[in-house]
Length: 241
Image 1 (cartoon, rainbow, N blue to C red):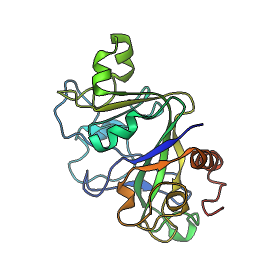
Image 2: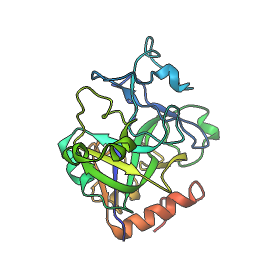
Image 3: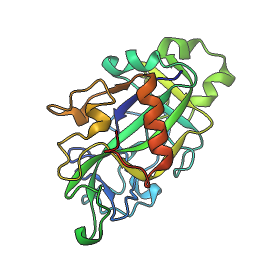
């Protein structure tokens, strides 16, 4: 049986000063954060991603920290994720093949609220935006020991492109990994700060305080239920028992 972890990614009001958008029907745009570290090779800019969202003045030419990378996203060719924070790297490094790594982001509503799906949160909300079905997770030291052809799997990852390389963990996603077409809500339809049952009943988190910044862990039963809901979304119901 498989377990899963969900972690926060993507643009926010601090970096680069705007969240990714979510629209009335629940479709959204994944917007990465800026790259703030030196890199050993050129990395994409916001302009290279051809985003629909309006970025702050001067941001278009900023390099981006494109992590996670999704194969269907501009300038990406695989499913990889890296992390340089020990508090997240430890649990991520324990993911086994077949486990899920979910990604969630805070997104700002764009459009007419009167025509929005009833689960889209006004102003901003917290949503699942993608999933990796894990092929493997390796620590930074394990990556250093990989053969060159195995390291090549992670060649396009933002942490591999940093100078110096700084990932404490790297995760490869395989078949059934994807960037979702529709965001799946983790917050209630009323307010982004209020967690729905996917957080409070399925994950290890209480949903109190700034839960949308924390790692969420799902056991085997919760992972099975979460996967089924994601596969059925947006016809599913996050409030169903």
